[in-house]
Image (cartoon, rainbow, N blue to C red):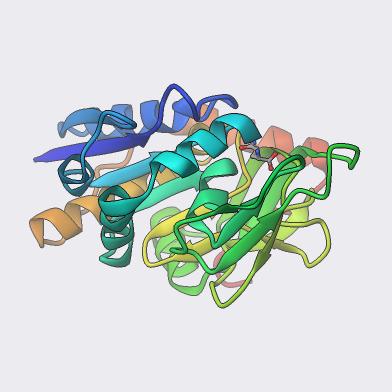
Amino acid sequence: MEIIIGWLYPKLMSTYGDRGNVITIERRAQWRGYHVTVVPLDQNSTAADIQSVDIIVGGGAQDRQQEIVMRDLQGNKADAIRDKINKGTPGVFTCGSPQLLGNYYEPGFGQRIEGLGILDLVSIHPGENSKRCIGNLVIEVTATRLAQELTEIIGRKPYLVGFENHGGRTTLGKVEALGKVVYGLGNNGEDGTEGAFYQNAIATYSHGPLLPKNPFIADWLIQTALRLKYQEEIKLTPLDDTLANQGREAMFKRLKVEANASANS
Ligand code: GLN
């Protein structure tokens, strides 16, 4: 079985180390014997390239690079991404990427940029003199179906640990939040929401990168992609995540957050 990972604008949208998400999916799939190809989706790609992928990964970017991407991602390329996400292609989109999948982004300096309108959210940077949202982030996943499916994978309530670094503040419209903030600021530092979840697209402010710190999300992406592609029940063989789990526990302890709740609590 094969998985094709589409990586959105690797050269422009890799400012914050989110390349680690691509590597994590790639390795965790290969360790289970799946064949993996990583395809860059950028200015040189076509709509057909976008249609060919099984998982989409998009990282963060600074405003200027993000603007170049948002201006390139129009027409049939935008339609292809919209179509893939609407049809349930799994993906993980971090920080600048959810901003471009939303209705619009207003940078700290310059004009509003229209987004793809796939996620019903808007993001506004309150200006270059405003404080950025920077620091460790812990969330409890509350998006109903995702929380259930992750609980099946790990046997307890899913908490994500990461690191946020953004100027933009996001307000959700009708889209479901990915989770609620346990530590940190999340979407806007005010309403306690973090990220968004739509079809099988995970949008988050969490760098870290996200997946090495929360490997069960990578497994959920792989499992969801394989089920969709091969139309059969897929159960991934477990991997030894002792080190990742120890890292998570150390971070929870350091931040003094209770994130060990069992599935029933
Ligand atoms: N440019 C966006 C912001 O500052 C995204 C930052 C990021 O991707 N980390 O809000």
